Each structure stands twice: as structure tokens, then as C-alpha cells.
Length: 249
Picture (cartoon, rainbow, N blue to C red):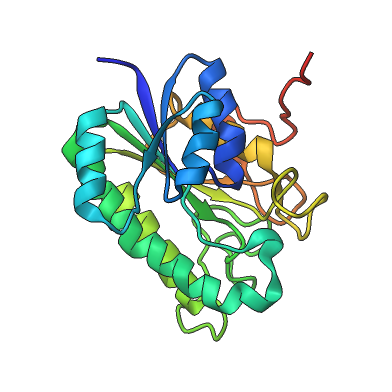
């Protein structure tokens, strides 16, 4: 069997930074996008492009069955560049649907393809600030999230809970990476924008490490600034929030 990875969301902020890391480590990468134009960009980057919408369950299942990847990485989001405030209300609704329905279709396609491991992007910035297992910060993976009745982020929490449950309860090696707010190239932010942020390349590196390391479960992937603990990811993956790609020669 060819050692290959299907990267859903290969043209996104993390996906674009993840592709060269995977290729450098010898993986044959198939990357999905909904855009024909972005497919051409992926091909130039060394990726086998797959033009498919995650909401088209049949097409997605057929593509994955034909590819037969060893590992699938879910980096799908539907958010505006730089989290542009005027677009965020509608984007949060779209993103919640993507996490719930899109993840359901992807999990089904992964199972049908025979892939052994699924790594999925989640978020770490919806912990309930007033509630922790140990009484104080930093937040750990077992701490409660905001309630689904939250007036702004309730729909987001519901989508996140659905994604995480689907990934970790599937008969796969399901790994969820709870990323902090992402900054760096391609994100619209040059510096951390809130406590518990993470540089985009370090976020991508965590996904690459999770391809071969770690056990089923949920992992925070943030910088250690007192807001969120990433000790579990550091121990399981050997992840370093200060990781950056080598400069081009």
C-alpha cells in the first residue's frame, strides 16, 4: 500500500503550511479543495489535488475509497481572512455546520476507505473561563467548555463538541488538536492576538507529528503563556510551540 495522506483543507491557512512538511517527510499527499484554481496551486506545490465539497458525501466517499490513504487530516474551516469582524456572525454558523455535517461525511468516508488514523482540527479558545478541573488556569483538555447556551459562541461549542465526539468515538485512531488562535503567514495576524495563541507553522507541525505519534484523544496545541496547557501534546508528540521551518537556502 502506498504511504499516503489525504489532507482535507489543503489550501487553508494551516493546510498550506502543512503540505511542505508532509512532503519533506516522504508522504504522498492528496489534498482537497472546492476550487479548481486552488487545485492548480496545490499541484504546483507537489500535491495530488482533489476537487470535492465535504458536503457531497458520495463524492467524498468515492474519492477516498479510490485513494486509500493511510491517514486523513481534517483541516477544514470556513472563516474569513483575519477573522474580519463584519463577516464573523455568518462564518460561525457555516463553520459549525462544517464541523458537524462535514465531519460526519468525512468520518464515514475515512471508515469506508480503510484509513487507520484521522487527525482533526478543533479549537482551544472556548474553555469556560470560570470553570477548571484544578481550580486555576492553565486550561487542560478535561476542563469544561462554554455552555451551548452561550449567546455568541453556543453554536460554535455545539459544532466543536460534535466534531470531537465523532472523531474520538469512531473505530479509528482519532486524534483532535485543539489549536489556539492562529497567527503568522497567511492568517492576517503577525503576532499573538490573545492568550493561548499558536504560530501557524507550529500548528502545522503538530498535525505532522500526530500522523505517527500519540494515541486517540484530545490535545491542546497552544503556546505556554499560562492560559492553556499543551503538556499532553508535548509529551505525546514531542511538539514544540517554538518550532519553525528551516529558512529556504
